[in-house]
Image (cartoon, rainbow, N blue to C red; front, side, top):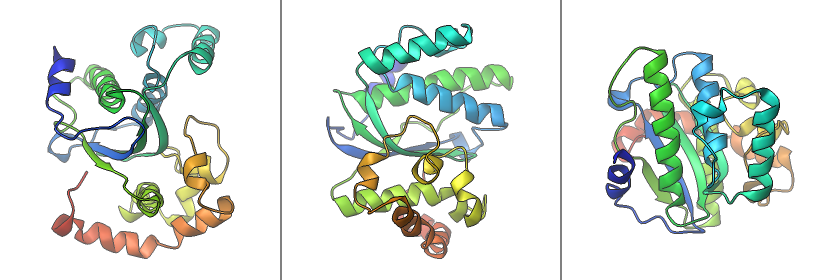
Length: 230
Protein backbone atom coordinates (compact mmCIF):
# COMPACT_ATOMS: atom_id res chain seq x y z
CA UNK A 1 0.00 0.00 0.00
CA UNK A 2 2.80 2.41 0.91
CA UNK A 3 4.65 1.58 -2.30
CA UNK A 4 1.51 2.11 -4.43
CA UNK A 5 0.89 5.50 -2.81
CA UNK A 6 4.52 6.48 -3.38
CA UNK A 7 4.29 5.60 -7.05
CA UNK A 8 0.96 7.40 -7.51
CA UNK A 9 2.35 10.71 -6.21
CA UNK A 10 5.07 10.87 -8.87
CA UNK A 11 4.12 13.68 -11.26
CA UNK A 12 7.31 13.86 -13.32
CA UNK A 13 7.31 11.38 -16.20
CA UNK A 14 10.45 9.26 -15.91
CA UNK A 15 11.30 7.77 -19.29
CA UNK A 16 13.30 4.60 -19.83
CA UNK A 17 16.85 5.14 -21.15
CA UNK A 18 16.84 8.77 -20.02
CA UNK A 19 19.19 10.16 -17.35
CA UNK A 20 17.99 12.12 -14.31
CA UNK A 21 19.41 14.04 -11.39
CA UNK A 22 17.46 12.51 -8.50
CA UNK A 23 17.53 13.91 -4.98
CA UNK A 24 15.77 13.91 -1.64
CA UNK A 25 16.37 15.11 1.89
CA UNK A 26 15.34 14.46 5.45
CA UNK A 27 11.93 15.60 6.62
CA UNK A 28 12.16 19.17 7.92
CA UNK A 29 15.78 19.10 6.68
CA UNK A 30 16.71 16.85 9.60
CA UNK A 31 19.73 14.53 9.42
CA UNK A 32 19.21 11.13 7.81
CA UNK A 33 22.71 9.91 8.70
CA UNK A 34 23.82 10.17 12.32
CA UNK A 35 26.74 7.74 12.48
CA UNK A 36 29.11 6.07 10.02
CA UNK A 37 27.10 2.86 10.16
CA UNK A 38 24.08 4.75 8.77
CA UNK A 39 26.06 5.83 5.71
CA UNK A 40 27.38 2.30 5.24
CA UNK A 41 23.89 0.83 5.52
CA UNK A 42 22.45 3.22 2.94
CA UNK A 43 25.34 2.53 0.56
CA UNK A 44 24.83 -1.23 0.86
CA UNK A 45 21.07 -0.82 0.41
CA UNK A 46 21.65 1.27 -2.73
CA UNK A 47 23.97 -1.36 -4.18
CA UNK A 48 21.44 -4.14 -3.58
CA UNK A 49 18.22 -2.53 -4.77
CA UNK A 50 19.58 -1.28 -8.09
CA UNK A 51 18.79 -4.81 -9.28
CA UNK A 52 15.29 -5.68 -10.47
CA UNK A 53 15.05 -9.20 -9.09
CA UNK A 54 16.34 -9.10 -5.52
CA UNK A 55 15.57 -12.48 -3.93
CA UNK A 56 14.80 -11.16 -0.43
CA UNK A 57 14.61 -8.03 1.69
CA UNK A 58 17.94 -6.39 2.37
CA UNK A 59 17.40 -6.75 6.12
CA UNK A 60 17.26 -10.55 5.60
CA UNK A 61 20.29 -10.50 3.33
CA UNK A 62 22.31 -8.79 6.07
CA UNK A 63 21.77 -11.81 8.33
CA UNK A 64 23.34 -14.28 5.91
CA UNK A 65 26.95 -15.51 6.13
CA UNK A 66 29.43 -13.39 4.19
CA UNK A 67 30.09 -16.04 1.55
CA UNK A 68 26.38 -16.55 0.87
CA UNK A 69 25.85 -12.81 0.48
CA UNK A 70 28.74 -12.62 -1.98
CA UNK A 71 27.22 -15.44 -4.04
CA UNK A 72 23.87 -13.65 -4.18
CA UNK A 73 25.52 -10.46 -5.45
CA UNK A 74 27.46 -12.43 -8.06
CA UNK A 75 24.23 -14.01 -9.31
CA UNK A 76 22.52 -10.64 -9.44
CA UNK A 77 25.41 -9.15 -11.43
CA UNK A 78 25.35 -12.00 -13.96
CA UNK A 79 21.65 -12.86 -14.16
CA UNK A 80 19.46 -9.97 -13.00
CA UNK A 81 18.30 -6.92 -14.90
CA UNK A 82 18.94 -3.57 -13.24
CA UNK A 83 16.31 -0.98 -12.44
CA UNK A 84 18.83 1.85 -12.85
CA UNK A 85 22.39 2.55 -13.85
CA UNK A 86 24.05 4.71 -11.19
CA UNK A 87 26.41 7.25 -12.77
CA UNK A 88 27.17 9.35 -9.69
CA UNK A 89 25.97 9.63 -6.11
CA UNK A 90 26.68 11.65 -2.98
CA UNK A 91 25.24 11.15 0.49
CA UNK A 92 25.24 14.16 2.80
CA UNK A 93 24.15 14.44 6.45
CA UNK A 94 20.58 15.45 5.55
CA UNK A 95 20.19 14.80 1.83
CA UNK A 96 21.11 12.49 -1.05
CA UNK A 97 21.95 12.96 -4.72
CA UNK A 98 22.02 10.50 -7.62
CA UNK A 99 22.62 10.72 -11.35
CA UNK A 100 20.58 7.79 -12.66
CA UNK A 101 19.75 6.23 -15.99
CA UNK A 102 16.41 4.46 -15.93
CA UNK A 103 16.78 1.01 -17.50
CA UNK A 104 13.24 -0.39 -17.15
CA UNK A 105 9.75 1.07 -16.92
CA UNK A 106 9.31 2.86 -13.55
CA UNK A 107 12.83 1.80 -12.63
CA UNK A 108 13.80 5.01 -10.83
CA UNK A 109 10.58 5.16 -8.81
CA UNK A 110 10.92 1.51 -7.77
CA UNK A 111 14.59 1.96 -6.88
CA UNK A 112 13.98 5.09 -4.81
CA UNK A 113 10.99 3.56 -3.04
CA UNK A 114 12.93 0.45 -2.12
CA UNK A 115 16.04 2.17 -0.79
CA UNK A 116 14.23 4.88 1.18
CA UNK A 117 11.66 2.48 2.62
CA UNK A 118 14.30 -0.06 3.67
CA UNK A 119 16.62 2.56 5.11
CA UNK A 120 13.82 4.38 6.95
CA UNK A 121 12.85 1.14 8.67
CA UNK A 122 16.48 0.50 9.65
CA UNK A 123 17.02 4.10 10.83
CA UNK A 124 13.85 4.25 12.94
CA UNK A 125 14.65 0.92 14.56
CA UNK A 126 18.27 1.76 15.27
CA UNK A 127 17.69 5.29 16.52
CA UNK A 128 14.41 4.63 18.34
CA UNK A 129 12.17 6.97 16.35
CA UNK A 130 8.91 6.78 14.40
CA UNK A 131 7.47 8.54 11.38
CA UNK A 132 8.72 9.52 7.94
CA UNK A 133 12.45 10.00 7.48
CA UNK A 134 12.51 11.51 3.98
CA UNK A 135 10.69 14.63 2.84
CA UNK A 136 7.87 13.42 0.62
CA UNK A 137 8.54 12.53 -2.99
CA UNK A 138 12.00 12.69 -4.50
CA UNK A 139 12.95 15.36 -7.01
CA UNK A 140 14.01 14.46 -10.55
CA UNK A 141 15.43 16.58 -13.36
CA UNK A 142 16.09 15.07 -16.80
CA UNK A 143 19.47 15.63 -18.39
CA UNK A 144 18.78 17.25 -21.75
CA UNK A 145 22.35 17.73 -23.04
CA UNK A 146 25.80 16.20 -22.64
CA UNK A 147 27.01 19.45 -21.11
CA UNK A 148 24.26 19.35 -18.50
CA UNK A 149 25.17 15.75 -17.69
CA UNK A 150 28.82 16.45 -16.90
CA UNK A 151 28.07 19.68 -15.03
CA UNK A 152 25.51 17.94 -12.81
CA UNK A 153 28.00 15.15 -12.13
CA UNK A 154 30.42 17.84 -10.95
CA UNK A 155 27.75 19.53 -8.84
CA UNK A 156 26.93 16.22 -7.14
CA UNK A 157 30.56 15.36 -6.46
CA UNK A 158 31.32 18.84 -5.09
CA UNK A 159 28.47 18.77 -2.57
CA UNK A 160 30.64 17.94 0.48
CA UNK A 161 32.98 20.83 -0.37
CA UNK A 162 30.38 23.41 -1.38
CA UNK A 163 28.53 22.70 1.88
CA UNK A 164 31.77 23.20 3.85
CA UNK A 165 31.63 19.65 5.17
CA UNK A 166 35.19 18.92 3.97
CA UNK A 167 38.04 20.71 2.20
CA UNK A 168 38.73 20.15 -1.49
CA UNK A 169 41.93 18.21 -0.74
CA UNK A 170 39.83 15.58 1.03
CA UNK A 171 37.24 15.16 -1.71
CA UNK A 172 38.90 12.15 -3.46
CA UNK A 173 38.61 10.27 -0.17
CA UNK A 174 35.03 11.20 0.70
CA UNK A 175 33.73 7.67 1.08
CA UNK A 176 30.00 8.51 0.87
CA UNK A 177 30.28 9.50 -2.78
CA UNK A 178 31.16 7.97 -6.13
CA UNK A 179 34.04 10.42 -6.55
CA UNK A 180 36.69 8.01 -5.18
CA UNK A 181 35.62 5.53 -7.87
CA UNK A 182 36.18 8.20 -10.52
CA UNK A 183 39.52 9.47 -9.23
CA UNK A 184 41.14 6.65 -7.25
CA UNK A 185 39.65 3.67 -9.04
CA UNK A 186 38.07 2.54 -5.77
CA UNK A 187 35.84 -0.51 -6.09
CA UNK A 188 32.12 0.15 -6.14
CA UNK A 189 28.89 -0.10 -8.11
CA UNK A 190 28.98 3.18 -10.06
CA UNK A 191 29.12 3.20 -13.86
CA UNK A 192 31.86 5.78 -14.35
CA UNK A 193 32.30 5.17 -18.07
CA UNK A 194 29.48 7.43 -19.28
CA UNK A 195 30.72 10.62 -17.62
CA UNK A 196 34.43 9.88 -18.09
CA UNK A 197 33.87 9.30 -21.82
CA UNK A 198 33.69 13.09 -22.20
CA UNK A 199 37.23 13.50 -20.83
CA UNK A 200 40.68 12.36 -21.95
CA UNK A 201 41.42 10.72 -18.61
CA UNK A 202 40.61 10.77 -14.90
CA UNK A 203 43.01 13.65 -14.26
CA UNK A 204 41.14 15.85 -16.71
CA UNK A 205 37.85 15.06 -14.97
CA UNK A 206 39.42 15.76 -11.59
CA UNK A 207 40.57 19.17 -12.82
CA UNK A 208 37.09 19.82 -14.23
CA UNK A 209 35.54 19.11 -10.83
CA UNK A 210 38.04 20.58 -8.40
CA UNK A 211 38.80 23.81 -10.25
CA UNK A 212 35.22 24.94 -9.64
CA UNK A 213 35.26 24.79 -5.83
CA UNK A 214 34.88 28.54 -5.25
CA UNK A 215 32.06 28.83 -7.76
CA UNK A 216 30.26 25.85 -6.22
CA UNK A 217 30.44 27.42 -2.77
CA UNK A 218 29.06 30.71 -4.08
CA UNK A 219 26.21 28.81 -5.74
CA UNK A 220 25.52 26.97 -2.50
CA UNK A 221 25.15 30.29 -0.67
CA UNK A 222 22.57 31.70 -3.11
CA UNK A 223 20.76 28.64 -4.45
CA UNK A 224 17.84 29.18 -2.09
CA UNK A 225 17.07 32.25 -4.19
CA UNK A 226 17.07 30.48 -7.54
CA UNK A 227 16.93 26.69 -7.18
CA UNK A 228 14.82 24.05 -5.52
CA UNK A 229 17.03 22.64 -2.81
CA UNK A 230 17.49 18.94 -2.34
